[in-house]
Length: 222
Image (cartoon, rainbow, N blue to C red; front, side, top):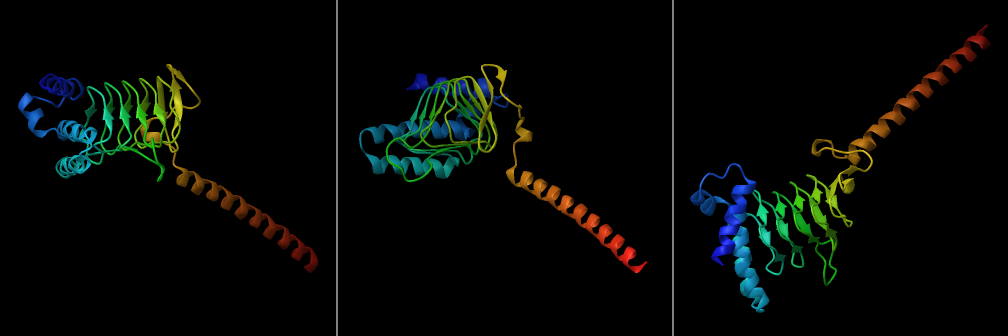
């Protein structure tokens, strides 16, 4: 147990340049507290002490702002950066060396039974505000861009961005147009642009019709 705890602390120093001392990390890192609390809750959950497991997870949620269902399976060296608003569902499975940022949801898509939450493979990174929903798999070494909504399987060694999420890099090669986190698709803005273009076109047609009508009136007057 203490070996795993030392490993968890070491991950913080590897991933977060703001970490300055062991005491600071142990006392102030909510992601670390959430992971340690989850291990206790998960142990009770596996022994079918479901109520006690949920109580522990909800107490942890109250103090850390991170909700991890006690049934979730989490591998080694998970790093939750900041963590506020992170939600990890009951049937979620997370591999080793995974990084999760604040506001991430690893959730379901409805009231389906059985495996209904995602599987995150080793070395994956889920960026700020991303939503990974349903019983899908995020492959090894893959990255999910900030604010993305992922509803389909992601192959290994891929980068996914957008709403809905799509693969833009796979095995180091770009697929289609690459998008930065600051340039994610905005379907509402795109629709407004389309409507504006249609309005401009209709306005121009109206001007042309008025010109034709004026020509006809002038000819009739003469």
